[in-house]
Length: 156
Ligand SMILES: CC(C)(COP(=O)(O)OP(=O)(O)OC[C@H]1O[C@@H](n2cnc3c(N)ncnc32)[C@H](O)[C@@H]1OP(=O)(O)O)[C@@H](O)C(=O)NCCC(=O)NCCS
Image (cartoon, rainbow, N blue to C red; front, side, top):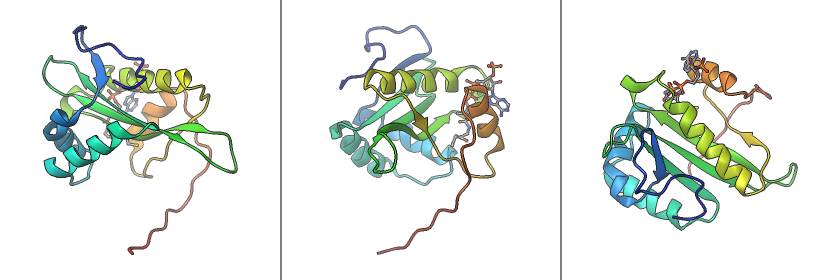
């Protein structure tokens, strides 16, 4: 597992946070659906493989019940021209029926530890305007709204 500050697989005290691998594709696909994104198990497999190959990304999964994935966080190191390199929470989700039990906190703590270990001292993220619960969670975790902006895209 690449430079992950989390427990090795042998440590099974829940909540257990570990690096993801392609065998997690089905569960990650299901969690993506609860986040509102339709990601097939095939696509999840392919994307996890690419993430695992990337030096600048870390996908952590959480097992609260051994053998069952209850959440994930995708961390990314961002290089920018206008600000120092920093970490980004690119995705975060906890399975619906276990929300409010400290699992999101465990994932964010593990993601932040990874960032600190890389010498990154700022974490940023974007969150849709209507995700009020997530906003309350991030504020509780010490995050503050920096700005709101519009996102544009174009299909090529
Ligand atoms: C956002 C999310 C990851 C939070 O995970 P969680 O496991 O429910 O959060 P935790 O139980 O670790 O909560 C940590 C703290 O935040 C608070 N908190 C969590 N959700 C909250 C909510 N909806 N409203 C108010 N406070 C909340 C908790 O009360 C707790 O506070 P405490 O320090 O007093 O104990 C989870 O709710 C989720 O997956 N939501 C749907 C997906 C989503 O919106 N993801 C973020 C996309 S940007």
